[in-house]
Image (cartoon, rainbow, N blue to C red):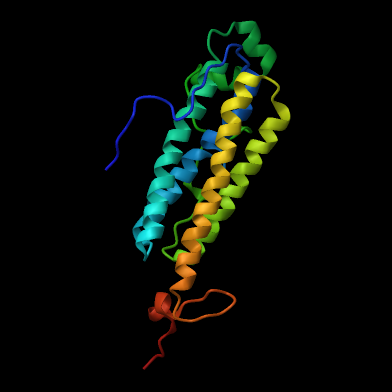
Length: 205
């Protein structure tokens, strides 16, 4: 189903370690709006999408999010390589180090481990696509916040690439939502579609 190229989607070459920054960037791997959650969400939702375009978009973007987890992992790894005990303690990386050394573990910047509780797959095309668009905007905001805190151009460069991809994903999910809305059998403001909910709307006999 996939053609895997054994290289990062965008190069990551960071010269200067910075474990404090690694702790913050880690949220884009395992945080509430991170790439691992996005990949899990989209690749789960794709099965219930009623139209081929939406299914294809969810598959494409969900797969790309897996490539983004590789990039975030590479960024965090390069920011934490060859650390001295003094650097670990001074940067506040010591709590993470005790649990994981410098391995890549999906968690938020606050240290909360990744959980699928932060995402949803409802089987309702409209509900899922609105959530997906919101997820991309929140991820874009997280990258904006990171860029406000990062000065190192080696780190900023791949982060800016990832931010741009969130914008593209938002637009593509908008296309998928438009396709669903154009196929509704009930034209209305709230995009409610009776045929999606026949088991809930048919009269009791």
